[in-house]
Image 1: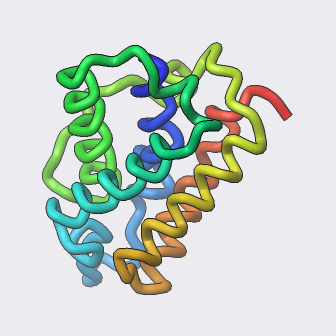
Image 2 (image 1 turned 90 degrees about the vertical axis):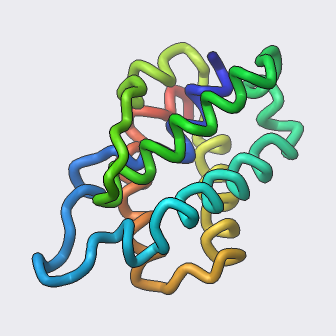
Length: 148
């Protein structure tokens, strides 16, 4: 489950109180502003492609069946969807539990944030929404990074 933990936490460690809070009640949920379910899937797919293509992240992604990888992907999509105010329900573990013992370093964290930023840029996510996503993700660092 190293893949699930790494991808869910880094990627998508979006299930935080900060992420769930929306600016104004009259403003559409971040989920809608990002483009809905298709956008959640696109962000997840591109981000996971970047992570899995990096040899430095191989320790998190090896040893999973194709079926397991599909389930992990869906958990990440659901987590992102739910955390941005969408209609999905995330049934995965909390980030601290999911990442315990993976020895995720500060460097791993920084690299994954770089990849997430590149994903959001590639998908032309507007600056305001990109900032909201990155701010929410930054709040998860304390639960994910175990080593300096």
